[in-house]
Amino acid sequence: MSPLSPITAPDTRAADAAAARGPRSAPFDPLLALAVAGLGVCSVLTLKSATRNLIPGSPDYYVQRQALYLGLGFVAMLALSRLDYSRLRHYMSLVYGALIFSILAVLAIGHSAKGATRAISFPLFSFQASELGKILLVLALAAFMVERARHVSERDTTIRVVLAALIPAMLVIAQPDLGSGLVYMVISYVLLFIAGTSWKQLAAIAALVAVAATFVLVAAPAAGVHVLKPYQSERLTAFLHPSSNPKKVGYQQLESKIAIGAGQKTGRSGAPQTSLNFVPEDQTDFIFAAVGEKYGFLGAGLVLLLFGLLISRTLRILVMSKDLFGSLIAAGIAGMLMFQVFVNVGMTIGIMPITGVTLPLVSYGGSSVITTMLAVGLLQSIYVQARASAALKGRVLRD
Image (cartoon, rainbow, N blue to C red):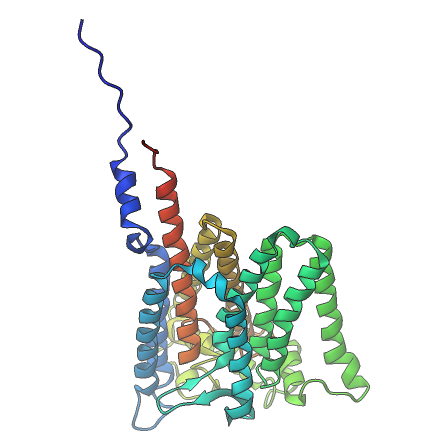
């Protein structure tokens, strides 16, 4: 009779190797990276067509600068993805203070352009604090809600979260930058929803928003009180009847719909509607109109598919996060992306008001591009940490 084989511990070399490598060597989310790269390429190709006549003698001005912003954003994304995002939770007050300070700095020393003061000019670029503020707000609110995790259903927590988002939102709207202010409020609402706030409190917030919008857009102007500037009110309501004033407030959306329709299935050669500047701001707010005209239904559909991939991976990372802080960060970023894509695309096809919301990673602008890249870097960090945590849980403890 052969001797019994000795009892040995299960082979844990694979798990030990994964643990030894640690979170810094864990793989990126390849599909998330693919979506970001695809949107970056779409941005550069669209800008090349849409902006070639904007600056005489410099047809590639916007293309070169956008490529630079994407490159800088990639470096920032890579750096942030290698950090442990959970450490940011300990700097909640500092992050929120930086958010408020940066917005106040813009109001104090920012330069005015087209009637708005939204950025601080530097020799090589302009810093738009309201864009970076989106990520700072996500981090600050997520950290606060983790601290209040046992009291998240209490009314006091909901009020404090809403007020923490409302203060920077009002400061940003005063610039005026209504679009970013709305993004701030959406971020807070999504975080409350994901954290488990009661339906009654969420419904109460929605009702208050509806009442406030009615007061600002209807009741107050009827009483002779204008909370918003006249042009802002006109832009918010023009999408309901754009043809009533086609040469003024309805002009952009009518021209945008003409450009998108002209693209048909595969695009229009030369894209004259956008390249000849019939659609104002077709490099920023209305860049989706440039995509639709130049590349048609196929190009517009590809951009939307890439956004679908980006958002679906963000939601996947939300689910797989190792802790509540990571899940809330991913939720805030998902809310930010979904709202911006829906509103931006919606206003180019005439179903949403013009609010100045950019299309992430596609619209021209350094602050917008780099902020979105930083958000993706946080998502990659959450993904890396989740993979590392899963590897550690698979280890078998030995004496």
